[in-house]
Image (tube, rainbow, N blue to C red; front, side, top):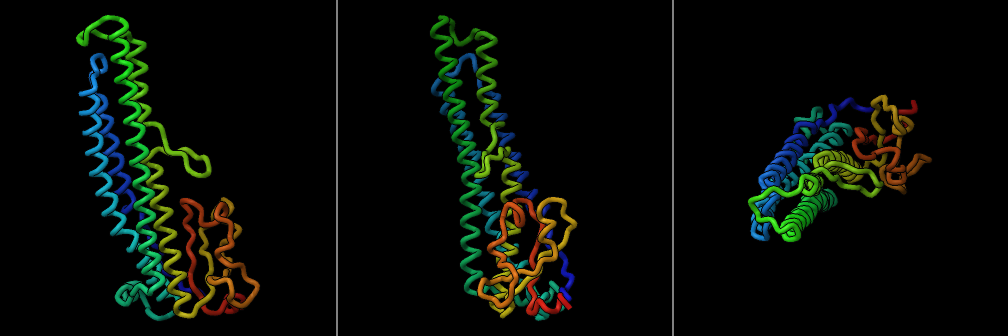
Length: 279
């Protein structure tokens, strides 16, 4: 039978990073709210942009450090689970003591770290681009309104103009990220989805790599009583390499919109002989 191994939980780790994004966005929003919309100038906008850039640089440094720590952790968890599943250790604690990245896992983890950092950098770049556009638009609106109305910077602009400028600045933070499937996410929810998906994929792929390296070419998909399309794959025996004997489906051919999708909790436990499950 398949060993019952505790599943890794990354909610707390992910919340640490999501909280960093929430705090950064809140700081940017506060910075934008300080702008004097009735008397904006190029100097004002440059100062605001410089402050936003500093906030995002700090966030990028924090997210890069998070990825360097937690993506390898997910890989270690996957390898340790496979070591226990294949009987090379009795507990996860014992397995973690003998975990060693084989060549394919070293390359995989390096790639996963780089990909995750690039995806997170794209989030901050998106925010930076939208904020820059919003500040420049608000600055132009303020200067144009003052010029055409002939009022000085100490007087209040028309309420409609101010409302439009505030909406422009607010949308820079509120407007979400559209993924490849056309779904719209707020930056913090996108980060949560992205990191949860990357952690799960890293755990799963490193587990598969370790299993194949130990001569185990099959796996069984975990059960969670799923209510979406995943339910059709729960308990399924799959090949971990396409040329393994048998009529089982290769894990790489399973549709990602049905199993192992974003936020998917399903894992794969390595087994050497799938006939044991049939018996």
